[in-house]
Length: 527
Image 1 (cartoon, helix red, strand yellow):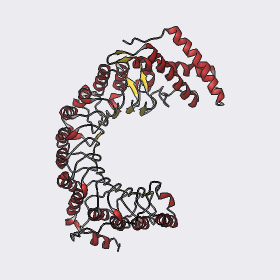
Image 2 (cartoon, rainbow, N blue to C red):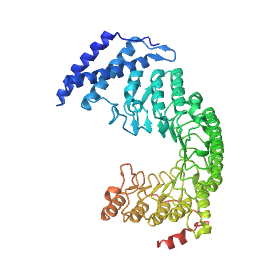
Image 3 (cartoon, rainbow, N blue to C red):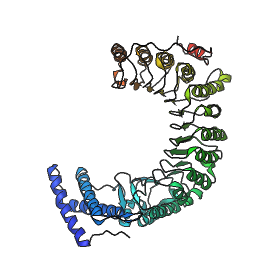
Image 4 (cartoon, one colour):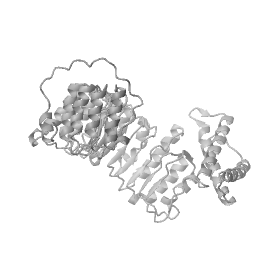
């Protein structure tokens, strides 16, 4: 139990003082609130602040000093009063139709609040109402302890027959570990009884292995889960193993979102085992998770279990070029692929070339036409040089009719590479965003890219900052964009560095392989 509390009389006195403060601040803002509205808001503000202070008073090793908790209570009161006045006397949490339950999506996300059982009853009124029509909900940013979780479980049970989408991301913040795990068990048990539950979001909770196992009921239950999000949850090796173990039948999975974890190669191996049993996978995000070559190869091979992949995001992992052969083979077998994000994966020029070549080779038997229709291509931070750019450009041209976004930020294109890329950009039908920031590009390369893209009506952004464009080059660049009516599409150039007088290194030896680029450009009518 908390070692901090206030007597009821003192809390009532606080509410009365808040009423006066709310009315006074509203008057200063030119808003006149009735005493009744101010009183209702003041009571709600005090309840929220008191609950937050009660939770903050408890730590994993005991209780915080009383003076520290009281100060936190006072600060929270001030924050909430200001917010209430800004919102015209309205208290966050009320939703249109909530009283009668006539809404389909209940969204509690917003300010950070620690819910009591009473506050949970009010917040979840739309789900608890007779004949509720809620089919999906988001509890994110509301912290549930044991009592509030029990109320939430009743609310979930009330709508479970038609529940399809449950977002319980970020719902245990600030709770002691034992209480947080109990809350997760309660919510999970309630969700396990939802026969139509297809979307489950557990992100932004400090899960770890204990937290994952606390969600056992819903992960092992009969819910037909098609989308599972475990982003920023501390998904360690052991947590990855627990996820793969508990999700015993992932055959229905179409979407798996893993981001900002610490899974590493071994954890990726456990997830790869799960993916090898998920032939319907369409959308896989395994980003910023410390996955190296071994884990990357395991993931790539696991993708061969199906051929439905539409989106793949492996960004911000040190995969290295060792992964390229397996990854290229896996991608070549995905005819529905639309979005590929390999930003910051340490593939290097050889790895990028290998992946692009594998994709291009898979088109060879179809008159050079790609199986896929790529719309987004991300290859930033992979040390792409002018030589590797030829393979990238050939891939871009192959998808000229579908590509909307190309990200080559922070590579090593230089002018030669940029001019080569510009030829492909000219072939794009409806480009929206092209990022060439930080590529050692000078005047010639920058202007070539602008001339290729400026005539495109669809263009929304050409990013060329952090390059080496001279003042004369900047003037010419802006002139090209302005002449085409696309000045607004040119990204900021505040970090551009003055072009130096050193010549670029001599051109690397040409191996004679242009990956079919010349023929593709010819077909596209690009010289």
